[in-house]
Amino acid sequence: MKYVRFFLFAALFAVPLPTFAASSFEVTGWLPYWRPASSTADVIPHLNELTEVDLFVYTLKSDGSLLDNAGLSQSPWSTLIAAAKAQHVRVIPTVMTGNSTLEDAILSNSARRVALEDAIVAMVNQNGFDGVEIDFEGKLASDKNYFSTFLKGLYQRMGQKWVMCDIEARTPTDARYYGTEVPPDAEVYANDFTQINKYCDRVKLMTYDQQGVDLQLAASAASSSEIYAPVADPVWVQKVVQLAEQSIAPSKILIGVPTYGYEYDVTAYAQNQYTYNILWTFNPGYALPIAAQYGVVPQRNTAGEMYFTYTPVGSTTQPVSLGGVSALLAATAATAYADTYNSHLDFHLMDWPDAASIAQKAALAKQLGVRGIAIFKLDGGEDPNIWSVLTGTAQSVTTASVTPTGGGASTGVPSGGTSSSASITRALDLGSTGEDVRTLQKILNSNPATQVASSGGGAPGNETTFFGPATQSAVEKFQVKYSIAGAGSAGYGYVGPATRAKLNSILAGL
Figure 1 (cartoon, rainbow, N blue to C red):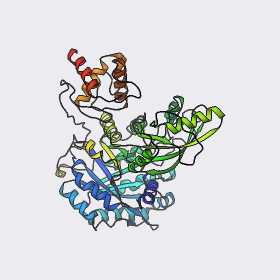
Figure 2: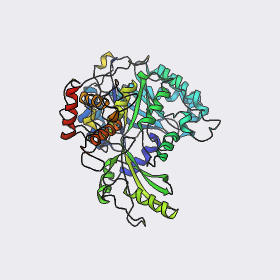
Figure 3: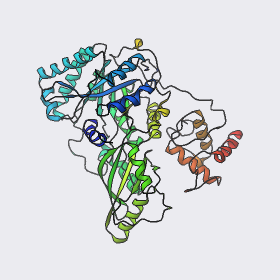
Figure 4: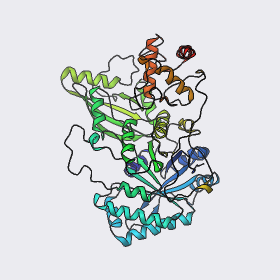
């Protein structure tokens, strides 16, 4: 959750056009107050790729009043705000708290609740912001109706200003408690989705920090002996979104997209059983030097994220021979030890999303027909290639055409790219987007042995413009079938010259 997590980030990193029209796909991003210089320097040159900047700066004091942690009237925030307004990008500050006791004291007291509503509206109007974002996490279930009343009062007071709501991800009960007894209070929630749909112009689902919350996916991974502790598996994200859509209009939903990773201390037991203990969060730039130090090459896992394992210097684990570059080097060694001695051994796992992961989430949002994506966080610490994958994602119109209250615009999925009838003329890899990816999928789907998917996105007749893990797997099958490349060889899963030549020769005959 963002409120809890931002303390981790603050400690870890203290040292080291828009389109609001009916067919718009929105891309928003949070800028954390604890990295003002790098956040603003990162975003200002790329404002044209964003619909909205979310200033992650306001918290609540113990008396319920607002605390500006950033000094928004001062540089560099004032420079960012002026630049965003000049480019008609929404400027929305976030009011956040994860203090359950404080939330209860304010929400359950009508006088304090109304006072906070008035204070927020005054803050928005005095600073000329386009609205406000409410990020109240960890609320008590007993405050569900109070929180709905708070949102209603705020919505009414905001007039033509936006009310955005950050809401925790809700995993379907059958997936969350898969294989276990469902507790009686499993569906007692602090958020009333029906009321949130009424009083929030946008609902940003915090679809990150998944880890082991989906026991069904975790069990599936365990049965395949996979190392599995994702920040946000697209399969889980889709479950969360589809559950939310039962009560919240898809035209209001934005999928939360993380840009940070987690390092785990993992214990391997016999027969490929693992337990995961979080050590800390990190930005991608922290992981790569460690991979280089231990001589391993990060790889993409089944959740579409980058990962590798290593054994810290001084550990008793002995490495095994996997060519010296395997992302699972330490995991394999620990597992072999656990199986041999019927014991257990520890290793470290680093897992994080890169630009291709972000592109995958954007493609998923379009596939599901929701409003867009909300990125946490943009502060210069994310994969710098994120901006290239976001180019053209947000579709722009003028702010004059917007009326936020009443539910916003309908969902529209922009299309683009080149003609699908053309041959494939460039290299394609995980994260690639464009009509040539659709062409690639059509070629792969022309043979059952290399089919991308049997149903859903990527299946015959439902090809997409995104090169995801399923497409990569199909390319690998294609390469093996035609003796182009195999597991462990250079170019495996990558559409290079040899693979492209064979694909185009098949395309000519279709």
